[in-house]
Image (cartoon, rainbow over all chains, first blue to last red; front, side, top):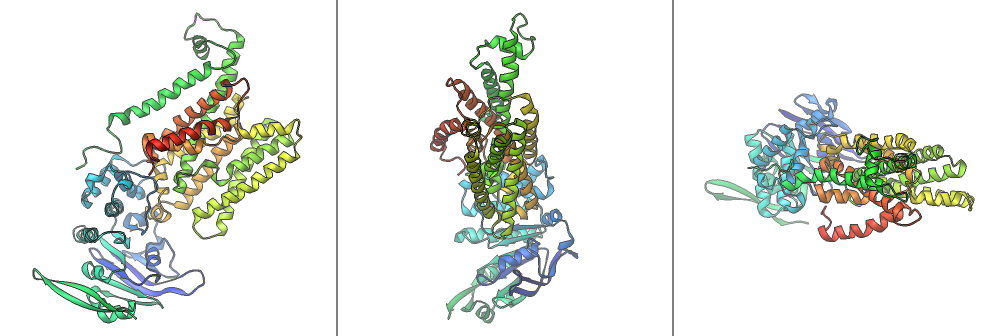
Length: 262
Length: 345
């Protein structure tokens, strides 16, 4: 499995280009992080990648097939997208919520089958929240809700999981839990993940590849270790940083410390 | 480990709920037929309803048979169909907008259909014309709302609600205009009473024409009920779950509009049912539309039937339905809110 974006460009209406000639690709089991300051169009980029918004130029290619030639339902059987804001209006039970992830497989006039319910229960166990199945989504914590949404995304058995700032609203520990889960999914299920994030630290910690965006159509794509360095962070985020390495149990843990910004 | 399946609900209380939802309206149905100015004893009613199969030794007069079969039965059936339809349409609209404060009137259907009916009464007064005009203008109002909302490319649902307010206001003004033009001795009272809602004069012709449209709409929405869950999420989430959001939305709006316009065309404007009943149903079976929409059918039917019983039996004259749905509905709703804290929170 390979997801590739070739020379993607996008602009709103006839306005200025938000981004131009972006190309990147990821293979199964890889995690790609997209970094960039506010308003640079990270969310829009994800929507273009999934086909929810049309590229102005360029295309997304999934296993050699351009996305715009595929049927919507078959796209969403392969790609799962978890948007940023989710306010739960109706307090569906966790299992009901996760079951909605089966929608790409369920006919318009049909109800979920026993098999669909079993799949939903399985994904709850994969994510480690089977005990929440009967709880209303309004009665669980923000961290648990994020896990529910990941379970819902996994219920459609995707090859690519796309998350828009999944760590926002999560506390320190929950952020780590979620990233650990994504790493496990990438390793064990050979899932490809594309993650929008504000934190270079998170990117450094979990991703194999990174795409950095900055205002004025600047972008940079490559291996995370090569892309995230002090010079690039300075130029993309306008923040002066120092990357420090801590040795812990023989492992190098890198962290980015902000020093100053103009 | 998931031992209990929280969707199929193994809990005994959950299993008795569907039974209750069938038995209770059945009882009310029978009581409603027995109820009325012209007294017919329950045994006779049973005998008439089963054309003598039950209690064959009881004799009944032609007048009694006519009262039961031609006056009360169509009225009771119509009340149930309209109540169910409005409740299901309300639940569908609430799901569609992801907002539990929405009622079927949100997109101006009622004002449009009300104007159509008023115009029909003004011009001809023939029931067929009134009904046709009500449905036509109800549909026109929603088409107008949909067209206006497409001028803007902002948040679709938000613009849709605003367009609904605009079109609703327009048709409310047009209703006033029709009232102004109507003859104050003859046409004006009938327009005013009609707009307040009444099931009096229900006939089998109404049932065949209008009620069948409502039934078709209810069946379509019931078939789509699981998808309503996904539609109630944010637009992006719904899209990313692989459903055709625009297509499904249009289908639900068109179907709920058909139901509401038909209801207005049959018995005038009846408020509150589409707002309250989905809440009551949600408190009974939970927010999953897979159970919610089916639950709205008996609860809505049962509620309007009860209201109509009050309308015809409480006072020597008929009380318009809108007055009763609000008088009974508002305190009941307040009580439920107090008891459950909203239930949908």
